[in-house]
Amino acid sequence: MESLREIIKKAEKNKIAIGHFNISGLEQLRAIFEAGQELSLPLIIGTSEGEGDFVGFKQAAALVKILREEFDYPIFINGDHLHTLEKAKEAVLAGYDAVIFDASKLPFEENIKKTKEAVNFIKSINPEVLVEGEIGFIGASSKILKEIPKEAAINPEDLTKPEEAKRFVNETKIDLLSAAVGNIHGMFKNASNPNLDIKRIENIRKVAGAPLVLHGGSGITKENFVAAIDAGISIVHINTEIRLAWREALDKSLKDNPEEITPYKIMAPVIAEMKKVVEKNLRIFNKL
Image (tube, rainbow, N blue to C red; front, side, top):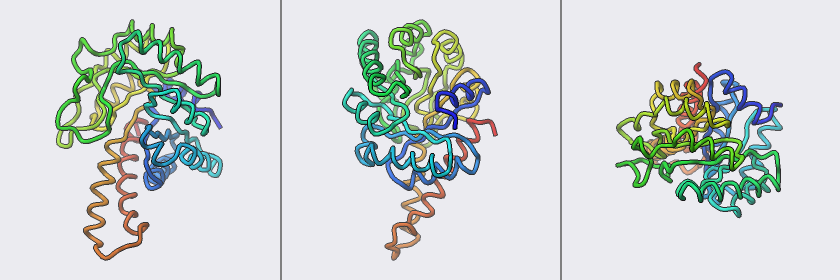
């Protein structure tokens, strides 16, 4: 089976993107895996610090490993937005394939210093683990937004500059780069998220020297996704959209079945709705 690094290179060459979907329970993992399997597409499962603590880093890694081995399937797991070396170590020792060390809220120089330290630390434990760094704060929570998060880089002067990206990659030696290009975590319930700066994505990829990852994918339009992938995005993160589908479908299932107490019967339509979200996005990312 191809490694995650090889799959990312192939995605970049073919101008498609790998879908990265977060989980905080078995139902989400099942929905994501079934959608990917039906389309025969590679998948990256993500757990944030909170999600990892809830599911268990070891347990999440074990579940993904079982699926990969039993079905001989390219499914991988990533530690999403880990902020300390302790959490990074926990994920790597649990068997994660990749880790995002996020120091993006810090000033640029401090971000470089902390990320470089994290790369060296993680690679000393397992040199095969891919490490992602992030420049530019884009919010910190996958939720329904009423307004753009404070301090989020949305204005052109606050977005990641190509020369910053190049220096960041060169000095930290990260494998993957996440940049602020107009994206934000979370989504507006009744409107699309702000447009991405496609030209900036293209310029960053030309000079940065590392594959690009787009965070905050929930709420971005299909046209923006396609343009961003053509410009150099190789991985796209989706979380809020799945959470919203989970909540709305769960509310409906409970309302439609007020006497039902069997969890898997209540959750069956919930899984189906989350699966639709994953499939829709995978088709966009892979131009199907």
